[in-house]
Length: 597
Ligand SMILES: Nc1ncnc2c1ncn2[C@@H]1O[C@H](COP(=O)(O)OS(=O)(=O)O)[C@@H](OP(=O)(O)O)[C@H]1O
Image (cartoon, rainbow, N blue to C red; front, side, top):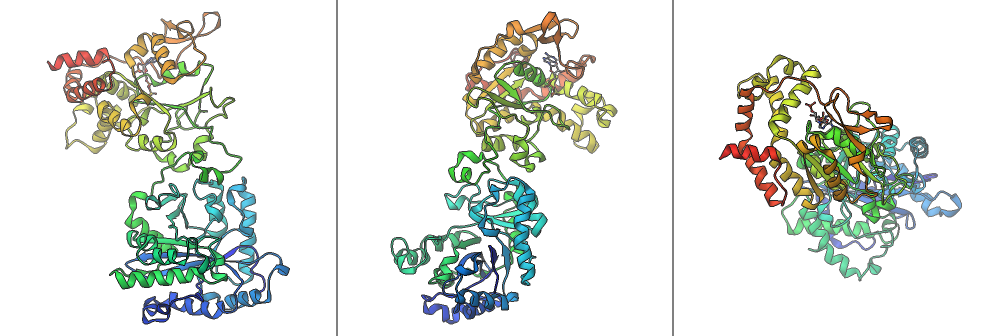
């Protein structure tokens, strides 16, 4: 191949000079069809390419066959290449159809170094142009990023550029969620690209010669023959490996390792090794592990390896130090208004769809990734003293939010507000009516809360949304699985409504924010609004809009009685939980508990 320049990667198998006899044994012939042909082809080409620079990446699917991907790259400057290398390249290109090809990056550039998607696209186009000029297939749908850059932590520009240039659907990395321990590696799907976990095989750029294997060749053989590598394959239904180019260019340590590993596994276990092309392999992977489809984002700066492959133009400082999690209709917007009055407390910018709430951790916005989330926050002028926060009131009852929040902002403080769940349900119903929710307009409050199992589905759905957030103890328990109690503040919403200044004192203390802000002076009761508001200059006030503190008739007594009974056991659970946490019981809860006696 005259000009395999840059870093175009190809699937390629080459035999090792050191290969054991088993390689030539009938065992080897058990490797099926295409893989076998490719090995043969690589053997023929490999003879000419003693100094070529190769890396490899193997997919091992147990209960099936085995393949290796290898990466082919050629030195940019012709004068640095030898005639032997060129000859080897020609030989590989002459057999272009015998290999599975996939792109890497031009000149081994790391994608996270490109902030603009367009410049990344330009770089990728160089490889694509090269491939097209040389008749190299470009439709594998699989790509590997140098040094895992941009795959995880996600550099969204890479995902977009990959899709645009190569129509990439699959990649792999060792970095999600962390390099170590390898057994915890997971896959995920982001922007329709399936990211598969890659295993470590112990062959690195500097591991070139069998005899110079770190700790001696016996260490490698031990790993293959019942050691770490053997167990990696045995314990993972699907294993993906990537070895390094020079292994193949020198004494082909990569082939030695994988051929012997495959033979050892076949000899000593009843597992069948099978290879699948990347797309099928990825589908198989997520069929086996559907729960891994959803990613779990972490702070890229919490891990040095991640930080090193995180764009220098991005920061980790645009993440909240605390979250106001709800539940809805408990006074979260009032708390939000009061918080942003503090000189050191900064909130996110508004969302066009959900206003002050970003609603990232609970639903599908999460899949937009952390760049999307961080873009809502200002860059703090002082990272230590500034407190960024976010309030999204439906985090409270979300199944996903606590786990996701703990993964991205594990040290964040969590603030929740509780009012009588019956009042909360009624306020929420009124909120739905004012937003012209057809079901809320159609059915009375009593019909909503008392609907039975056979009620129309729209009514049942509304009932669930109305009542479930009031299962306070269950939701709090879930937050407490992921956050220690000292990171959780439970505010009495009744007190926030009637006497907010002491509550704000408590909040400041809990957050450890400075300077101290005097809310007794900064808040005033607005008799027209009927609520506490921010006191502005010349005695003016800034209150919440019409949608907070709505005028509606009081709850009817049948609904009150129904809900009191409905929430009884859950309120008892809440009292027990608050007792365990050493927290005082709000007055509404004490009253409800008296009804139980
Ligand atoms: N200071 C002040 N001003 C206005 N409203 C106040 C205030 N303090 C508490 N509340 C109560 O807050 C209720 C709305 O709660 P949320 O802001 O959490 O609602 S939302 O979930 O964000 O829609 C709202 O509920 P409704 O009365 O049903 O409208 C109020 O009762």
